[in-house]
Each structure stands twice: as structure tokens, then as C-alpha cells.
Length: 257
Image: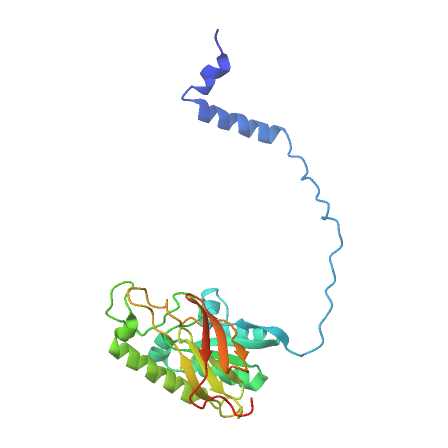
């Protein structure tokens, strides 16, 4: 039995013929109107205007590098972010940029924050906001293999400590700087009974066990700590290795607490 349409489907001219047929159908028969959606004719919701200038109870992060990448004016973008009255804005001191260009950009951001009363958290060190996370100056790129422990590079270790000290000294008197984050630096404990002169009194930064990759010890302390006041203990969870209970000794526990 002969099946004409089967022979046509097997023909080498089939693609061209199908294209011609589809074009003829498209021009001959108009397309129907799109199917109406049940919510398409609903009136737009009128959002209430917020007149309360109090900060919202969430924070955000800002990267001038990312704003520039998106084709935006980073200064204007930051001012618009300030106008949203976030509780805090996190900024980064990009080490590689500071090493080449100086502190001009960061000075502008912190001076603008000071003028507008915008609280800021400043991240200082090798890591910063956005990919590739580590912003090490080209002249200090570590000579380690992939997966190696860059902390073993003595030159890099000394240089980043100098950078942190320099940045903290430069901005420590800015009244809008409410915190300084220590990424991959374990659990840090500060005495803040004098808010104008906080003092680090203890830290716990257990190294990675032998044979494991860097960062798998207790350095990734990103959780909010819990306190057992009766036992003089601090409890926190590490992002890579689990729960830790630290007992505060050495006379560093505040008297009467």
C-alpha cells in the first residue's frame, strides 16, 4: 500500500516545502487574539506613600563596581539607596583597588554616609562583596597551587594585616561606621561597655584539621552567637564544621554579668 504523505516526509525537499506552507498559512489566516487572563483586567493596586523616615529593619549591600558594571552612576545609585532608609548598608574596602587608586572612592562613600546619617558596615581584608570574592593586589598574588593554603604565604599575610590596620585607622572615627566584619576569621568577642572605644578581648579561630581544605575549620562563623550567662559560655555554629561551645575565661567575663 502506498502512503503519499510518508514519501513526502522522507523527501529531502521536505524542510523547504514545510517552510513555504507555514508562511502561506501565516499570511492567509490572521492570528487570534491572545487568551485573556483572569487577572488582566484588574485595576492596578495603589501603593501607599510611606512618609515615615525611620529606617527599615533590614540591611543591604552596595558595590560601586557592580553599579558601574550595570551602566549606572555609582554615586547617584548610592544616594538613591540612602533614600530608602535601610537600617545599615554594607560596603567593602577592595584591597586591589585601594592598592592602585587609593581611598578616594571609599572616602566618598563614608563621607556621604556620614553626611546623610546612614549607618554602615565596612568589610576589610582580602575578601569583599561580589565575585571573585578575593581582591588581592596583583603584586601580592600568592604563589600557591589551586586548593593551597594562602595563609602560608608570609608576605601576603603580613601585607593584609597592614592593610586592615591602615583602613581601620583611617575610618575608626567615622560615627556612622557601626561594625567591621571579619570574614573567615572565626568568632570575635568585643567588650562594648564603652561604645566609643570597643575592645576585642577574645577570639576563637580553630585551624582546619590536617589533610582538609582551608576554610573547613571553625573560621566561617556567620551565625548569631547565643550566650549561657550562668556558665560563661558562648555558643555558635560554623558554616562548614558545626556547633561550637566556647567558655570565656582568663578574667575576660564582665563582672556582675
